[in-house]
Image 1: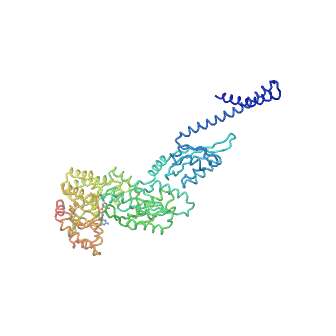
Image 2: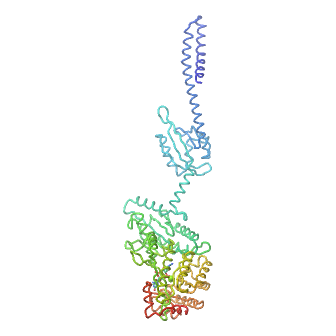
Image 3: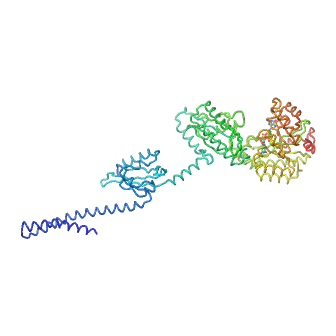
Length: 632
Ligand code: C2E
Ligand code: MG
Ligand code: MG
């Protein structure tokens, strides 16, 4: 169609120039001169061609613009083109869906984008604009904007230069994509990877990143900070007794308590279970660390109520300092953990600073769990037996089976080193089965020598709540050739804190099969003398903490007397635990408590030693053990 445009301009210019020449011809020369036709025709052709060309280019430009507009208008992303002073020359209609503002508002106000970029992203936005206006090249940018209704959205902003024919920068074209959903997804993934779902605290991974950043930033040896490893005391009892849901609520409550005390320079994180770790950048000496740790413990020790239950919590804290106790994440955390573990084990202090002498003495949780796993596989868990004696005659009336880990490398390992971990990981179930299996084997072997003696096995609240474990124990007993009434199960009061009715039912089941029930460590937990009357038990084991005090503390003596008298009323067999001195033994005799266990009589001994002692002349044989117990 271009020839029409040219024709139009040729005719138009010829009309003008030709009519001028015609007027000249008619009025000035009065006769025909061919140059008056040819020259105007040539000039009209040249000028017409030039004007025609101009018109064609203009039309093409217009068409291009319209085409660009038509395409850009359709684009889902928000596209704009602006000149270097920030006036918008094109803004796609999709701006409204993304920002809530119309294209007109952009046209009216130069640099309108500056107004909607989130305050926290202004600095990076300004850098981006400077780059785009300067070199014309700026890296793509993820920024937050605030929409008309103050919603926060994430956009990916890409700009490219627009240059004229001479290559001079004249503007910037951009495309903005809504990446809010993607950012939310990324945030979720980040949260899952780096935050603890229950408490919302940073997890071990994020803690490690932060700690390593701090180490990198610390310019000199003089930069000191503290790592505090906090572990709640007896938390597993709460889970066992009240269930995990309530246990979780307790952890959240404790988190709030500790968070309140943490300032900006302190990062609190949860490593899992009841383990919390803090980096305190502003704690640089033992004095400050001790007072901060003490504040945390006092706060945690304040009783709190959840679902109408009053919780009395406590915690132990181990402290390690950077760089003296470790210059990397794992060493620092391991050493703070070691100090915490040691403080729990020794029970001398709730706060302990790491000391190189602790060395390998303590066992790290993760290692122990893996090692216990091997121990279970290799059947290394065996029972030792602590005799229960009638202190009037000194005769052994029964045995308590106590788990020992007969480790191939380390020899005999005591429960204090593995029971807590085994409880926490659930490995106690397998350990318990292994021990009971061995107990039954030992009892069968002893019976071949004519020894029939009652043996008590310890069943923790976690084991007791596990019906498979209880059924397995029952069938092991049933399938053995042992006579009923020889096995006793020791449970603690924790068992009654969960589902009381289920506990009662389980106890009655055991008792119906001839298994006697002993209540262990009485006096340490949530004991109350009045509820004692309602429990279907046979034996009451009074905790060592009472026995320790009966020779010099009137209150302990009075409580002890009351317990013994209730036992007599209710026909419970009282057994004093941890008797170590003759004075204690005398007091017990005076109070009418004839049965006891303790180092004064025997420590826990191997099955072989049990056999030898029971076969020796001082101990009478067989049925008399049972007769003694029934006599109490
Ligand atoms: P427990 O059932 O109360 O056992 C008594 C603990 O006191 C035993 O420690 C025993 O060796 C210790 N003991 C006895 N007499 C004295 C004394 O005169 N002085 C002192 N200082 N201690 C004395 P052990 O063997 O280290 O066991 C500790 C705890 O580990 C047990 O307390 C029990 O709660 C748990 N445990 C042991 N074996 C098993 C098991 O097979 N299953 C379960 N679930 N728990 C077990
Ligand atoms: Mg016991
Ligand atoms: Mg006990």
